[in-house]
Image (cartoon, rainbow, N blue to C red; front, side):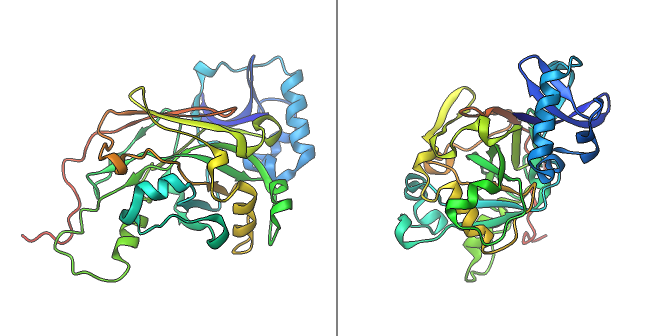
Length: 313
């Protein structure tokens, strides 16, 4: 089943995407409507999902895709977690630029980091060019949406906590405008990299949430990213160093995972940083993952002024 959040007629709603059109849950006579949002359905569990699926089969009242504006399937996740260096070839191409080494599965653990919810942006939306960097990059990633409250779960049980999957583009600022003239300090490079993940609109998400039964096994999904129709990234989720089950298990030992939490599972090789081919104003990025659809966005105009806190005068 595909669940979507969207704007229709000036208000935000949610529903089930079917080949016939979109079944709008709030306007249908169903107790699922009282759950209020996609993550509400996930939190309510199997019965709510089954009722939403039954509603989608029976309903004759449909919205056309052309008449709605898709939004991120989860609007305000409690936690947005990214994963650094989860594909070996990407680690190799990044080299010393990110301070990462080739990290074999047997001797390392995942490297998670947090992002603010303001990074989320909708399918089709323009990604603002940030005022703190002149070099921005693309990163296609499989995104996991948690469906059940989970704590200290083992890998063999972890996929039961997954409510669905969607596509993320973990847009990244590769330079910072406050580096020039700065006194060198330990950890500066790490924080520059981390700050480069936080700009408004830097995590397009969508087009919808696909439940595990329809998405298929998460380690057998092919992905492709195109910039202006040119393929830049092409890989398969089987190439992850840490599988989705291992990632969820690891994170669940660090924190309680809750319905609606989003985990971006890392990007494969082919990013602009490796070739020096960064994104520019007007560039169109299309991210496709098997069974999940295509997420498309464009880059907005470059700022007239960049933020340079250490500039003199």
